[in-house]
Image (cartoon, rainbow over all chains, first blue to last red; front, top):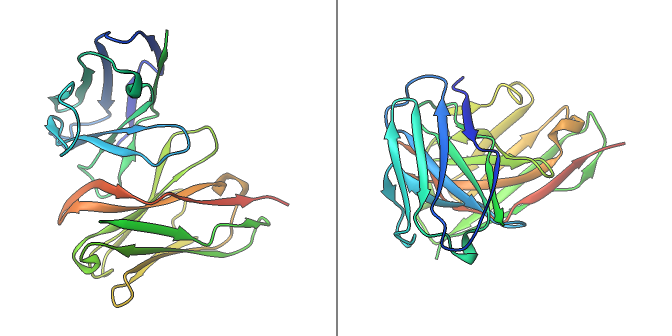
Length: 107
Length: 120
């Protein structure tokens, strides 16, 4: 199975900050990498797919990059509604796997 | 509007069996693969199983293989997860999720989840 790791596991940031989260795959997954946001008590929401494509309706302050094994999610200017957990997910293999998550909270 | 509504979650003893359902509406259910994803309390997301469009193909995480069975009834727009030999570590909120496109294993819509608690 393809293992996914994320760093950091948590971070504290202020409104307006630029935030970057890293995701790494245990083998090359080309660009088959997706990012989700999850708020407490809610279902996850798809933000970015195919490493860098913005899901419809998602604000443009969210962006993704990377290919192969290393990927990043960037929030260009953190907004109050962005405090949440973020998960990467590989869709290269039919045995799907998520990263362990990164929790973004208020500094 | 796409809607996914899970049901069937309960408190159940270890070793027991349970069937979860996910009623879908607002899209052509028979045209999309569907998956179950779970989340243990305070933990991250954990993919469980995927059913192909016709349910001719099914995929399972190693942790549930041989114990869980995914199925779907395209005539009733419903996805199922039969869970046998339940263990304490199966305790989680179980979400059903719609795949975005044929062949695309990303999830564009999720249900609200149903809680399964395995405890004596």
